[in-house]
Length: 269
Image 1 (cartoon, rainbow, N blue to C red):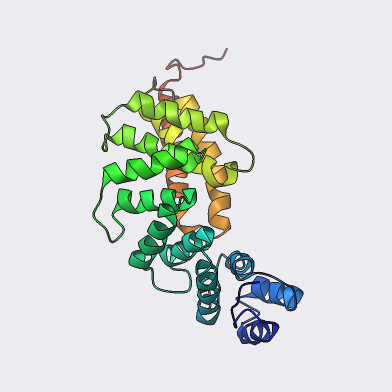
Image 2 (cartoon, rainbow, N blue to C red):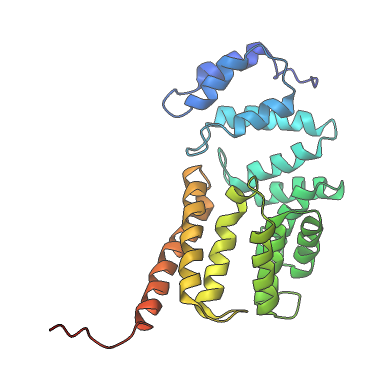
């Protein structure tokens, strides 16, 4: 166990007693089950971050988790660096702080942490308190994609679709999105399938890189809704707009399908 004076049974009891059972039932249950367990600072922090994800994190718990992560960071744990950055990026329990997020992502990325490299790619892609830099975004996404990170791969697809850093190539974008689905594992699907199916739906609906096909668009939008609903229900609020887009896309696809139906009326005897 790392040498952290906050990672003690006494401190865990103190934090547990400060939590509200109505808003932090999972965290309380975890503390009660693991008060005296030999958990490293990183293991404890990671477990607590997963608790009660549909509500904001109490500040006392946020500060405790930050101290745990910082202790793990002091030992060179790059996953802790990345996860601490994610905590500030998401702003769950604090004000979003992209500057701190980028600091910890960059520190972990320089040490070869693939998830941190992917996250840093997002920061450069969207300009999270740093100038938008599509060249750097592509670089970091490529590192992740080469290592099997499907989120990095579909973001490269976005760059081909929009012509960011690379020459605009909608066909290549479509093939990349399709490859994500074809190579996706059951483990990756809950995190990746929703956004990718949404992109494929838009491609089929609008003929982006593939022949327009309203029926395929509808199928993809329906799949996107299925996965995106679960993501939002788990607490990933950032996907609410994507979920709505998948629902709206179904309406657009159905409208096109209706237009394609034969125009003749049925004549009964």
